[in-house]
Amino acid sequence: MDILVLTKTSGILKPFGIVLGYIMDFIYRFLMLLGINNVGLSIILLTLVINILLIPLTIRQQKFTKMSSIMNPELQKIQKKYNGKRDDRSMRMMQAETKAVYDKYGASPSGGCLPVLIQFPILIVLYRVIQNVPAYVTPIREVYEKIASPIMNADPDGSIMAGLMKKLSITVSKFDIGDINKVIDSLYLVKSGSWGAVRDAFASSPDVVNAVNNVSGTIIGMNRLPFGLSITDTPITFGNGAAGIFPGIMIPILAGLTQFISIRVSNKISGAASAASQQNSGMMKSMNIMMPLISVYFTARLQAGMGIYWIASAVFRTIILVIIDKFFNKINVDEIIEKNKEKAAKKAAKRAANEEKFSQYASMSTKSISDIAGKSVSKANASENVQKSQTPKTEPAPADPAKKGGKSSGGKKRNGDNSSISNYAHMVKRNKE
Image (cartoon, rainbow, N blue to C red; front, side):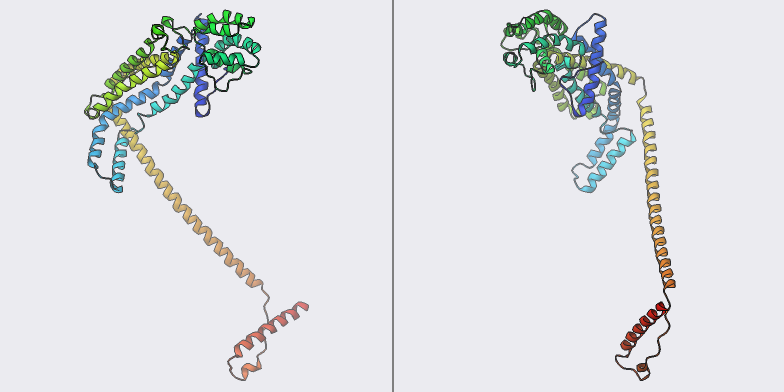
């Protein structure tokens, strides 16, 4: 199964783009076998698959939430104990005691943030997929290619297409009329009611006109949503009267409502009404209001496909949270905590053992270095002794008459000089013999 990526993801997001692209392509092909050619339903099913794949992270987040409700009183005591103390010793002690509490319950400070951090790049890549479905779903690309090919033949310099894109407010990065991928990118952004403008712009080309007449209906059907909306359209378009607002406004309204319900259910399950959360009730209330409003804002400005994902994601996330909560209610949280304590104790013992081994290795290495150094010195001394034993012995020089005559201030120096000369002469004589 070949996926032609027109707008490619890059860097660390590339693996996410490849995976989501294959999943989207597979879902659409499966629906085609059932006689359903609809991008909106494919997006909904893709959202379901993503939420199912994220269930392990959701469970981990729920565990962390349950543990937090028990850990928070202890953590608050530590914060109260060191409140106002900013010296280095107090800060280190506070960090050590806080870490000890997390180790005690087998939790991690980043346990609640990890699922969010992983979902963020997925959301970015999913936006790219929904914004340019033909780049990832081959059957859809083939439909748009039936219009793109005659357009490239009828407009070799790209002047007609440039004027059409300006009229329809379509922007494609590095657009090139000679690149069929870029032409398909631009055609995918044509709204359902603007195909007449495409036909009029290429009225002088019968091939383009016939292609638009034959294929535009298929494209509109693929992208159709309930109430006459389209995946590629912006839900709300001001300036077109009531037709630009209704029924498109239903998408941002549903996005905000489902987000609000999801947050309320999540807070209820996580025990947001506990004493620990009551202290931050003002901030919690603000977040409960801001998040749905953010959902309304973005889904009103982006393509309707993103609104469909936003709504479906909130619904599936809420259902999964309820199911997981039902599962956790059957489990004794105290037993989980005891198991986490045992794991933490084993990890601590393992760390202590590793530190002891490291110390032993360090001492062994030091001893080895000392032994090596001692052996090196011994070898050096042995070599020096061998050299001394191999040095030719010289016969004693005859006595210096000056020495017999009595001591003088320069007698030693003259004796040393004469002895050296005599020794050298003697060595030369022996070598000649």
